[in-house]
Amino acid sequence: MFCPFCRHPDSRVVDSRTSDDGTSIRRRRQCPNCGRRFSTTETASLAVIKRNGVLEPFSREKIISGVRKACQGRPVTDGDLAVLAQKVEEAVRASGASQIDANEVGLAILPPLRELDEVAYLRYASVYQAFESLDDFEESIRQLREEHAGAARREADASATGAEQASSSSAGRGVGE
Image (cartoon, rainbow, N blue to C red; front, side, top):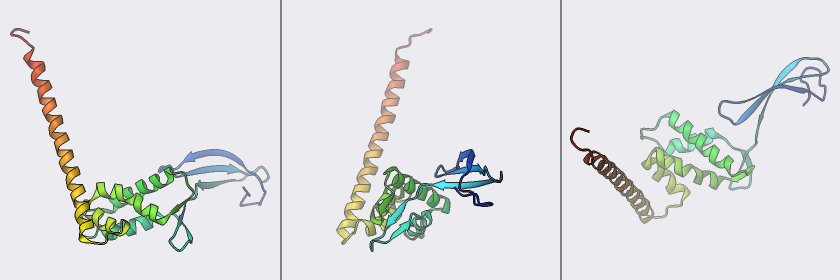
């Protein structure tokens, strides 16, 4: 690392700190030649391979702008979109690859978007899962309804089990206990 003041080709790391979002490291360095201190920021690079083969740096802003279109008219805030973009970046970086296909980024958006807003999910999925007919929409809606029904059954079963346990524990007590 060259010193920005005297261009000496070496420096010593004095302090290292991870950024709040955990995606970069800030290092305080000192030049052994002139003694001045400076900061550097290090990040792991992540490139997206576009359909035409061009490499482009990963951008949370592009995620947000693409998903914002699917969320038009929906009760989704800018903060919600920022959290979604962070989840997508974490999922993409977890793959360990330094380059990822743009379509894979689009597919990585689907699970957190589905949690955020199902209508926006269907809008977005229609592009990235290449819906070709109403049947594709109907199938996706059917899957969402089945998941809702399954979740409701699990919730009802859990509350019934909790009620049974509460009544059985109180039934064993006698008078004067």
